[in-house]
Length: 250
Image (tube, rainbow, N blue to C red):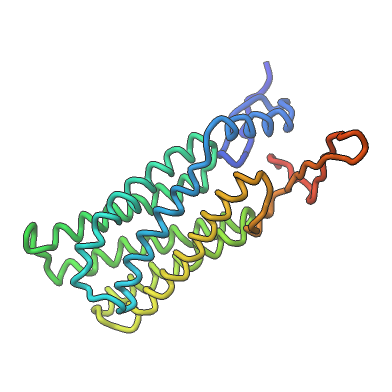
């Protein structure tokens, strides 16, 4: 009986016989991804919309009193829709996207519920609760940095989205710990604006590239790109590979 070992893929560890060909594992990974639509554009759009809305308030462009008006879109689109996109990313075998969308979708749901609870119409908040909020926001700063490190080998643009987001959460948490109303909040807002604009671009590029079946808009991908073209000699099918493919398992 073959020994069962752990093979690492983009979907995470897979327990299979040690003598299974690497190409077979890679083929199964591709098949799994090909059977489900890419949820990343939905997740990125939800993230970008919610982050842009809240960051516009954080920068001082709008009064903090307008936050309740932002709660619906943050709760539904940036929260629930992004979280659902994360769960479908798990189904597609994309652990990185699933973790990112699941985490940030959950954050936006949590933030929205928190904002509803501290309003006088529901439950009044107290200044003593501020450090607790700073702690869980700081945790998301770490999550963003972790995902940034993971995304470096996938896409330069996605990495920049996560790096700017880590700065957003970091400065926001620091502002809460300091006492609020500092320039740190404004910096967090502008970092959020940058992150959301980059996310809008990533989502746009993914949709256009998917429909074009070619990298029309660059994402700084580190993965191989295979282009198909028709030869002028009898319409023969020719495959052009522009980069060298990495082994899925090392």
